[in-house]
Amino acid sequence: MVTKKKGPKAKLSGIMLTAILILTMMPWHVMAEEASHAEGTAATNAVTNESEAVSKETVNATTEANTQEKPAATPASEKPAAITPKASKKVVTTTVKVSYKDGTPVEDGVVFTLDDPVNNDQKDYEVKNGKLELQLMSDREYRLGLSWDDEKMDTHKIVEADANLGTIPVGITAEGKNLVWYDRQSKKLLENKPVTTVTLKEIEDDATPSETKAS
Image (cartoon, rainbow, N blue to C red; front, side):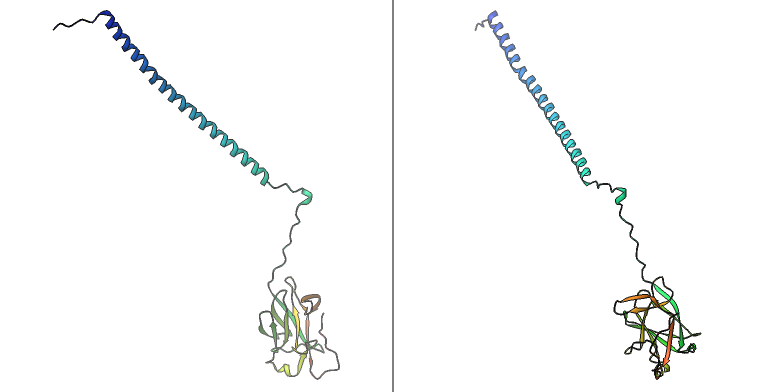
């Protein structure tokens, strides 16, 4: 069998075909890589630009909110007036003289009752050295009278005592030192009407009108 040798033309054709194939294949790889790189760069730039825009919008929104919420400065001439707190209620200890109409001090041991109508409570106090030492909650109504258990209740009564209750309405202010009259109508303490002496008179003595001695 005889093999024919390829001529120069056949060899040249083969070389050219191989070169064409190489040139044809290589650009696709290069273009694909360049396109991929370009797409990645574009995406990165887009994300960066979007982040910067969001950051600027957030800063602008925060600045605007702070500006709107910031209270307006109060002029010096319009400063609110200081509020003076009211004196709170407290327990006050005070003394009151106890005497008969002729000025004679009531003897020791005579019992008086201090009635607290707010708490529906009563407390007894004994006369000592012609005085009663009382403890009261300030700015409240109390009723002072002879104790129902004391024998004086049968023979004497307090001048100006309520005809039904047999007591006088009294109270004391938080800063006060003496008992004062309590007005049941206005429900206020009458600081201009102090009660420094509680006067007793005999029940049978109707010649002199009832009165509370104040000094």
